[in-house]
Length: 193
Image 1 (tube, rainbow, N blue to C red):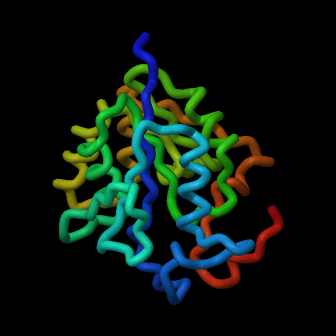
Image 2: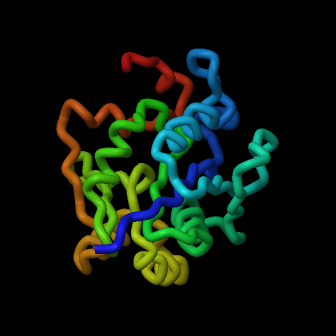
């Protein structure tokens, strides 16, 4: 079996309408969300880290490659397709900037479930969590094809990838579901974890 190699992508392309400001620059415990999420991704020691965005962020670190969505942006679908096209490894690990409860330990657990030609997408009940997941390079044609359709939802794409064995679905235990929680509005910033 080929050893899994990782590229990481921090997805920052959301418009932050409900939050009212750029979520990436929100500070929690003296650290912005973009700094925190890059720190978590660096713990995984990927060969490369990318940032996916609609437009160039003013906080972009000099040592990180930026991948801008091709217009018109189709949200996370655009960002993931672009990152899969740019990577030079076997797998892409994704993390959304607005998932501040995610840990390096949990992402390592996902990495341990990946294998040659197959990634891992967590499931919270019946819903896939495609923005903290692992995709194999083999999924790139599927993402590219999805960009040509009218549906930019990742849920049907994840089900299709699972059907052909390009991703496995990981049932997140109830006591771990909070790790996948995202912050979308000011009230979501209440930290219990």
